[in-house]
Image 1 (cartoon, rainbow, N blue to C red):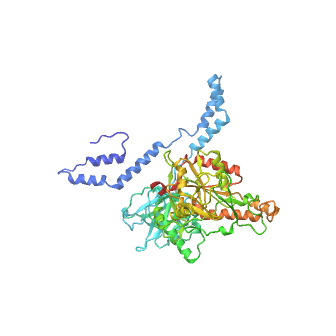
Image 2 (cartoon, rainbow, N blue to C red):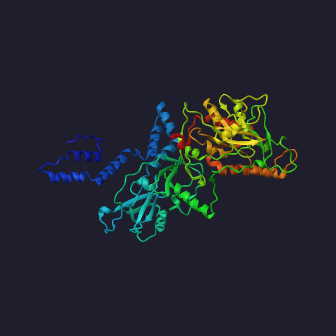
Image 3 (tube, rainbow, N blue to C red):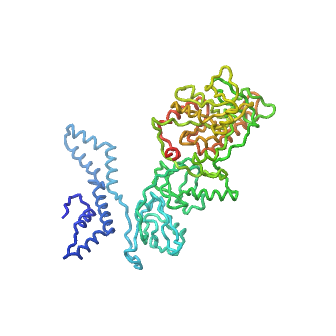
Length: 608
């Protein structure tokens, strides 16, 4: 016989007894019967439930008495009846303190309450139309949250069946309801002839406990382990505005940039997900990538689509709209200062002190990747097919000491002056930060050194590098060409320096690779409503002393909004620039933490 201990559970005892049953010739039938009974899964489940209840009884904290305050009063009366020594006097003072008396009173109030859930008895007048073993009565305690299950009508049998169980919801936590279970009654009401929406409304309106009569699925599959798929949302989703969702209450709202953990992809149309960091354990429904892309294509075909798409074609050349000047300031002669196209006839020329009007972007012209480069970067989508912003699979990445530093990319809207921020940060610590030295076809000046201000090359060599896709962006100014090469970036990173580049955002599609793992910072000037209103009241038009008008501020805001709309999904950090000193400090703090903190990055950057 098996050796038992006081801690042996009933289901363990059952397993031990089953293992000892060895049928012989004389008692074969009886032993086989016992073994079949003891091996029954339902009996094992009952034994486990019994043990859980006993464990709850043993571990449940129960008060020793529920009249501590009365006992304290009796002790105080006894102490008052005679002389008090030191310990007795201290005890008397403690028991007469208002705070102690209040604590004891609260203790008695709590001790007299029963906090166990009170469930109504199982009704005895259950229908006997089905076999007893095929019917399951489930009673769930419903709080303010939904049950976390959706239903549908079976196309073949017409029965109401459970379509999905929301991970972390009340139905999932109970472990009593499974996908495929047939629903017959809700709180004693037959639902065979009701529509699914009527049943859903009945369930949502029920409060307290809900009694379900269920015919279990023929085969109950084991619960699937939670998925480790994480997605960065690239669009905002509001379930109550989505008429296609099977259950709006079960929909899961999210904003662009949220990190979602997908816990189930069993349904090809509606995935189950929850937001990383959300204290609510219940998952919700989100549209799958395929379904969302399919309906966005339909909206685009019908002309009702208004959202952004990932840009795949190079931007139009707007250099003809700008007035330009070559910036040869020592240490920053790597760019071309570009004047905003807002200049009108009679306005001052380039070189006057309208510093807000200048932003260092260069006469840039992003180029298309060749077909070979698209395949190398993992881009398999046809070049003419729009790429909708839906989800991006990401993973948590912690930079190791042996890893090459990540590339820091600065993009900025009109008025951000990101080159100034970059130069200020680099000047403070040139041993930690560096810039990619650009190439140019213009002649070298007397004070310039090769590889310091520029790499000076011939026009033929420059054109050859363009054909070889060596530049992330390039442009032409005064018959001279300028460009920033990938090799210049690699040179800085090879020295274990943080390489800071400020580029037009179109070039991000070239840099977003496992090699560079770019950390993208979007710098946008602070333009508040009050500032626009104040500017409009004080300076309705551009003045001769260079004050900013409301038209200028509106353009700055519009520029930032447009850049956020088109490229915000590629941004890791938004830096709102109120003044240069504060922005430099914030940028420096972000860079100091870059290699110390983990970040969410696209999965191909780590698995490639």
